[in-house]
Length: 338
Image (cartoon, rainbow, N blue to C red; front, side, top):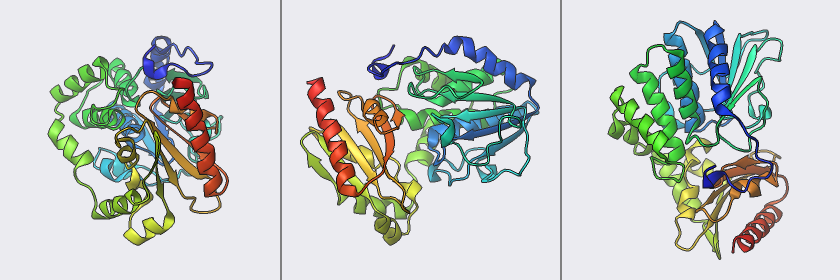
């Protein structure tokens, strides 16, 4: 097992080699397929879902992609993004329902059909902390992104592999490897990326579209958020408030990647981002680690999860108490790692 997956309590043996053919068989037999992903989708969730949708449509399947939330601005150029449904009709039924990058069934949208109308439920994920909620759980914590799993399914289905499909897979890999910078970058994802380039993907064009065409509102919001940067020993924090979002005329999905600025401070081991609730809900906390601290283990203590170096959770309470609880957990984790 890779270092990024060590230290997770009661880690399951997901047996991806055994579950891949089960996933392929279910999709091969299906005529109607629903593909969804966790709410507030990121590039990996959306890219992997759209990759599978693109390939299945090329194979003649009737495919619906569903997510009730806004899509990340920098991945909306991908094939099929404009057709993602924000709701599903009552009584909609499918032969197979695919959940990509979800982690848990309750992270899916409210319109996902009940069991008697969703067909085979296929759980595609690479989080070692994911729940086994699918009829088929094709989960591989060694995979750099869920797009890697989608790629393997598409290849096994044996249909055409278009440039559009390749771009969706490549976008997924870019998102979860940080443009091949994170520790999740491994020989497998680099080999697959090379095949995607051979299929027509232009690396520079993809990098520009994903990382270097940022809305002005995002840059203004980043300036506001960086003004909240605090460093306490080896922990750095940033805060995103509703007032900042309103002032800059931005959207909440424009904050992806802000936490990496906090992690990049010299001497910092863990970064935490605190997102103010929009209503009376919980604070959303995201974590990033340089590698010493397993932030997935911290997130799990609050009902969240993720990877060794990137995780998240939601915590009820006022800001001061939430911050204090996180600071205590990070301090304890750093002591245990010393």
